[in-house]
Image: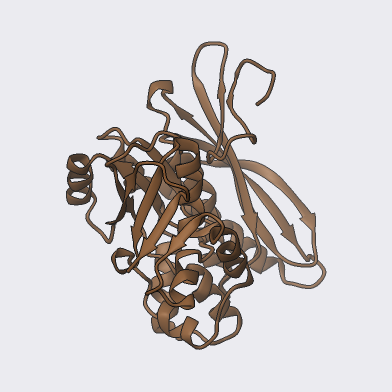
Length: 311
């Protein structure tokens, strides 16, 4: 942790954004994220990347205020129109979130990269962390998973439009509504599902909260095509590494196949929020939020390993 007393959360924690207290007592949040294209359409890529960058503010219970662009682009190799479309996608997604993009920085790079630095605000007593999960909490996931597998299939030209469309739709959907609905309750722990996958991010919650969790594979909502693609051997390298790490901290049921285990560790882009709530509040959240959010497990007392996954 920083020696600066104004810094409440920094890189030493596993929370989603930095939290800093200003001299007037107000709380600001800041986060940054960017990556290379995962879809062919430049405008859609800009939307997805912006939604992904904004997600960390929503996962902390904050409200985004403004953003800065981070851009890498091969200016001698690709038309400027492509860059304009990427940035327009980001600008439109930021506008949907109700914030302006006020500037940024770009470099000449061999491969396009795009993302945002996002600054937000929060009320100190209402900031969410990943360290407060309590025994008996229900674990809610607000988006289906499988974007890592599907993104890999897109790169290999193995994904049909019927598979690509729902994946793109979920990746470019803001976590704004999920955050706003959750603010009606008092979540004990919240994070968003990104590169470490469902199990990886849940391990962080359990370790920080000194609890364990049970996950039920059949209760996890999967994007269309996820199972078929993985059966075809389409497995992202990042998801494989996630599973290798997760197996040190997870008791997987013998009933689960290797592919099913891998899905629980699939590296996500712009994934949903993972929220732990007492059962009554969890039910109310699902009734209010609707969409495809569902309970995927429960928090239990601390065991030898943080996670148990069964069918």
